[in-house]
Amino acid sequence: MLTLEYEGPHYLSGTVFVRANTTLVLQEVSAGAPLGQVFYSLDGVRWNEYNGSLMVVAQGEVDLGYFGLDSLGRAGNISTVRLFVDDAAPTIVLTPSAVDGVVSLAEGDVLVLTANDSTGMTAIWFSFDGGATWKRYVEPIEITEDVVISYYGVDVLGNVGSVIETDAHFEKDEGIPSLFIILGIGAVIAMSVAVIYLLKKRNVIK
Image 1 (spheres, rainbow, N blue to C red):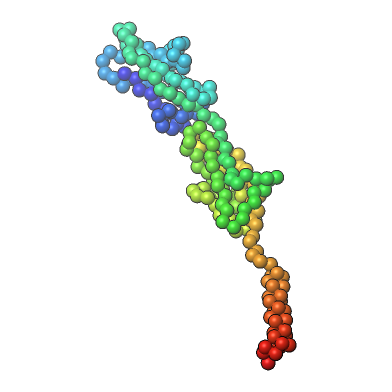
Image 2: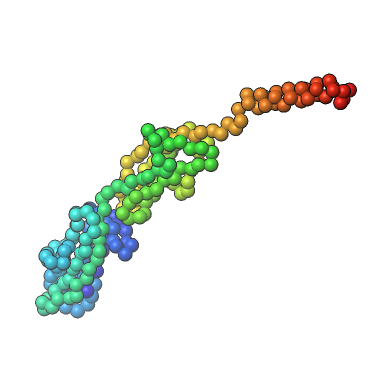
């Protein structure tokens, strides 16, 4: 019986995610007649003799098949493992989307960072000080002033994305401008004075 082990970046999740520099090692674990030869295939058609280590460089999904022949020439069962070779860095999407390089937010709005990556396991990091300090993204971000947000992602295989910087503009809710408040109060006072004057003129009040 053969077992498949991984030396280097890998992530087991049904499909086995690896990088092109991950070494695949086939080892004998069963008792009985020792293995004479081990063969593997990446397409189920062409079989190659295993020489002690194996790397799969083609990106994307591939089914690795392997089996061994013992010293008596008896073939073991073929085992198959679905691999996904991933050297691509994750991309991070910022919501709301930027318009002309600027994201506009009103009071109550938040910044949301979402990762796009084959593994589905990506850590997102962000900074508000040009990368001097970084925080891991765990929930939507609320801002109360204009900022420049920097962000990037690192997937479970160690692929690191590029740092992206985006201006975020916070539109303050100033409420009713003071001038309109003053004018409104003035109008109420003027109307009250006019009403009192008319009532006095008609001798309703003295």
